[in-house]
Amino acid sequence: MKPAILAALFALASPLLAQSHDHGAAHGSAVPATPYAGFEAREIKSLSENDLAQLRAGKGWGLALPAELNGKPGPAHLLELKDQIGLSAEQVSAIEALFATMQADAIAAGERFIQAEAALSDAFAGEGLNEVTLRRLLADSAEARADLRFVHLRQHLATVEVLSEEQIAIYSRLRGYTSDPCASVPEGHDAAMWRKHNGCE
Image 1 (cartoon, rainbow, N blue to C red):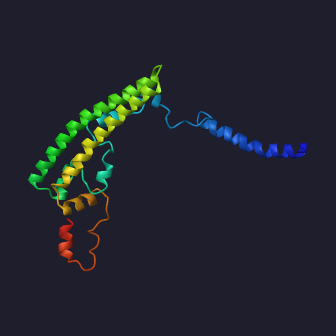
Image 2: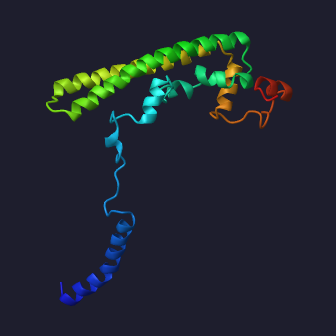
Image 3: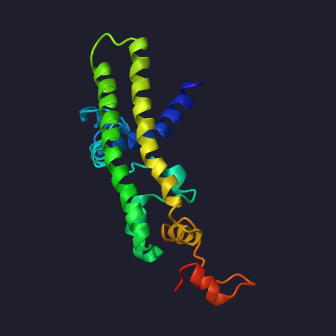
């Protein structure tokens, strides 16, 4: 390529290179931050402080979404919405018992999962980890997580036994999983009965 053409290309590229450098300098570094920056300070690398707090409190941690989003309500949210759903005293008592069992079991299972993840994190922090040990550590963690998930999901199965279809429909609407049936009455339905059955009153 001729020197004159090279010089022209360089002249065109120089402002772009300068802008790129200035953009990086404005953000403190020309190297973009990784999404894991700061995670190295965690006690257990795979779990945040919020993760640990939720697990130790027996919270759902998103483990029951397959049930929750398929019309199988969880006891915690049912109790939060008991008045809007119209739960009877007997239903509330039954769901409170399910919740108490779930929370106690979830705290214990959550602690086992935390310890399994801690063991995995510690193994990588040390020396001499081999594939055989890694397989065992991963199996321990997977089993602990599956146990924890079972604790939550089984109670979603149990709640369905004490709820009516109408109550489940109201729950789903209140949680924002379905469109609002109160906005309009389908053609061919008695308006008063439709609104009553869907908890619109």
